[in-house]
Image 1 (cartoon, rainbow over the protein chains, first blue to last red):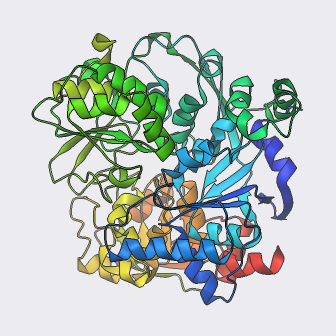
Image 2 (cartoon, rainbow over the protein chains, first blue to last red; image 1 turned 180 degrees about the vertical axis):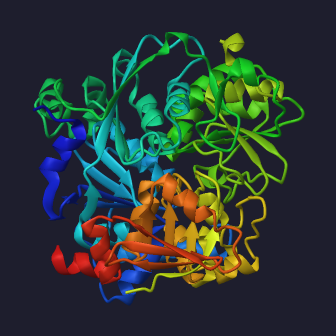
Length: 427
Length: 175
């Protein structure tokens, strides 16, 4: 019997099965940020267990509110910073080096095929783009992960998505995943892994695959997973060239984590992207989606480009390509948050930042801020935002605010027109 | 072990998310107790008042499918805990929320829709309350002078976490 990628990773990391149906796995990476980790740290101290299982496998970043906006957020940052120093956690990213966790950690080469990854953040599923099992967990699971390097899971079933075809003009990974969530619903993949296969995925960059896997949680999925291939190897090569004699050798090794052809799936869903249109959410749930044709003309107040979903260099390039030579419509304001300092620097070198600023965008430092209404772009009551983020819950970007999720291309076109607009006419 | 049962708060909608349970702007609080005033602050439901007497009295929440979807924030179970609510009954839960509840030694109990419909028929009863027996796997709905008992299943692991009072000590002893 063949196995899915998640089954292979579970088998290779199994510590024990303390009760039927519950598997305790050894962890390869425990990722931490300043919102969900400080309470775990405080609790460990209170229990007289202020230890870490392996400082080299713990990665930490201050990203949600940075630089700190008030005493409370400064305290959260300080707790994380002091803890990282105390335990000699080398991979700690503070102001100047910090960025959105799910963009920063992959950029640093921390995530490899076959890894088990947890973080106290629901969008941890992003890292499955590398052929890893990566799951968001709460503070208690994080605390145990920090202390013992293990986490308990129910063995998830897997849904296989066969995504085939060439993406039409103006349609990107974001549109594909919004379409999929619209199709299966916000709990369509609960307790399931979403495994992505097919020619469309094979042709995607690692950045696009991360966009895709990032939103698995919006369908309830435990992890999104893409099959490791030469694209994965090329991305990781600067970090692994000492470990393998050649890229082919790395590919041969990583291929062990690809799902077997005869693996058993809970469901198989075929998606043909050839007829996809730019896709946008209209309500307060990520499965409430419509095409840009249906949504065009919706009035807006703010455009936000950034986040762990769509704040990477590829996203900035696409948006800048559309924005070049244009100005923001006078009725809207635009905010760009490149996801990491490296992305911001490269965007500067490529002249992308200039395009955004010429268009009238405010360019912030890398941070999660506005996406969850914590800082740097919170909406007022009744305001509407065209956003490249991942969650459109009521009040998500500010109490009484409305969020329409979309690709960077659609957000850029909408910035020019001041209302939801079709990006295809600008490409 | 925590106690389970008491007055019920009915939240008759599916997909109630963690941002509705506790908005992200309060995630800067350092202690669980500080979250207390903000329970369900952004939840908009007909007849529901997040600071009303029913919310204040509640020990159990009854809701519909996919309860607790969205963020991984354990602040959602914590805001229930500090308000005296230690059990949520729903048709289904988002994975992370469900595990967070058990990891804190609280209960997230799934019931079939038909059972929930019967329980929701007590939503208008002033005395609606529930008794929950984790060991026996039964819960009894009391309201308007009637009572009805339902059985439920939780995984052996989740049961062990409830009985042990949470995951941290268990894990430190066993791994």
